Amino acid sequence: MNIYFLVEGQSVEPDVYPLWISYLVPELKRVENFDEVDRNNYYLFSSYGIPYIEKDIINAIMDINSLGKYNYFVVCIDADAATVFQREAKIFNLIKDKQISLANNTSLKIIVQNRCIETWFLGNRKVYVRNPQRNPLFIKYTRFYNRISR
Amino acid sequence: MKIKKFKYENKNLELKINPINFSNLSLLVGVSGVGKTLILQGILDLKKIAQGKSLGGVEWEIKFAIGKDKTNYLWRGAFEKTDSSDSESDFYDYLNDESTRPKIIYEELYFENQLLIERKENDIRLKGESTPKLSSCKSVLNLFNEEEIISSVYENFNKIITGDDSNDVSSIGIPIEDFNKILKKHTTMESVQNANIPIYLKLALAYKNKMEVFNTVKENFINIFTQVEDIKLEPLEERHFPYFLIHLQIKEKNVSKWIPQNKISSGMFKTLMQISQLFLCAESTVILIDEFENSLGINCIDTLTETLLYDNRNLQFILTSHHPYIINAIGMEHWKIVSRNGGVISTKNAEDYKLGKSRHEAFKQLIQLNDYRKGITA
Image 1 (cartoon, chains in turn purple, green):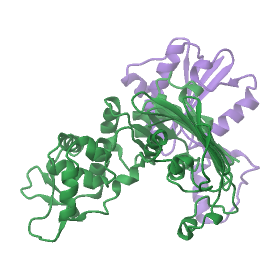
Image 2 (spheres, chains in turn green, brown):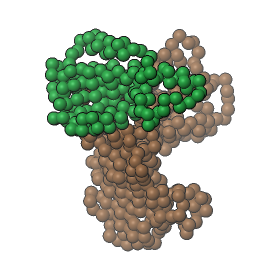
Image 3 (cartoon, chains in turn cyan, yellow):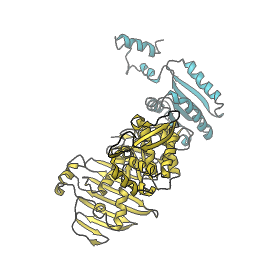
Image 4 (tube, one colour):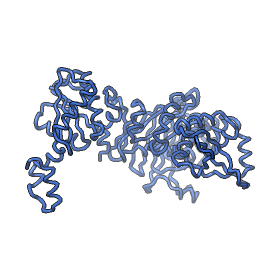
């Protein structure tokens, strides 16, 4: 199995995803260039921010199709102020508008980080205790970002 | 001159630059603080050494080619280490006291693999012959700059210039008599190009002597700033000083009056100076431009690229940039990806990372590299 990860962020995702993968799927080994995948490899491309990711999705699809060795194309993006559905729809529409499709042997998986990847760290009790602060502003932010409590 | 390979160490600063191979155009890329500017400064240090400066702690090796027949040279040497954390001190020059200046430990100059000059401290042999005792602090390039075989090497080190040099407009006012003398002296384009005068003055000479190269500069400038119709360098008419005050003036479309220099935007002025530099510098000049986006600017990139593509004047460019537009515009075959481990700076080519096969834009491919993202390690 080979996976192409396209992540939105420039500093968190490129550090976090490879670490997660090393625990969850240790047999999956990272390659430095997209065309170096063979068996049980993954390639990770960082998009350095949302304004550019749309162009990168199209370029990634072209790379994936040209190589023909990827089983999954995983796009990891933040939801931010939008909903998960809206974010997914945007990507589907983009691909449709550009009249491009993934080759048959590759499946598209979209991971919407709701609301953003940092939100997920709120679930780690070692990093974040449930009610750490009495500061009203902090509580307001926690309510917005902590999706587990909803 | 073409710098082919450059290696540098500054023991005073505990800084080492591993060998870098340069081509006609090299773009140094890497995160801030990685050492791109230090590479340019290292090259400039060699110019200073050739000019007779003594730079404590510096050890160098440079391979370069000179002239149309591309004669290969290799020059290397080392100064003694000093306590100062700064390798250069103008104070030594001020005192003009040889005893306090760092001395050269060794120095060699090869001409097509033949040893021309060999020096071990004060013992200097020129083509195998011992020479009289000379300054132990000055490079042989400086000491023998009037010897036929050395003079071209010496002169070529003077042809290393920085992009900032073209912003030097300190000599706007020149006594009319002097200006006329210079004007008469430099009537050909080659003569203007080879003159050791500020670029602004070169442009004024090209204008006053109605040289074709002035029109080339003007056309390139108008290509970038399309609102401009014409440019001239004339004294402002209403003033009569004994000085020739060169005033750049610009005529814009649908504006009846010429716009005087002090009303021209600094960006436009800078751009004009930079374009002038491209066309009015001497043949075989090595142009070092730090933070290309801040000096020559994004709107000049096409002019530069075109000048390079059709360059028949043997120019060499070594640039640094962070800017995606510039990095994308300059082919990755010209990149030197810079990384630093403590005080050791290294460079690699894009092909070393097997870049270039992907459809992603070039800058995006660059920033995926671990050596780029984490370019500085302790």
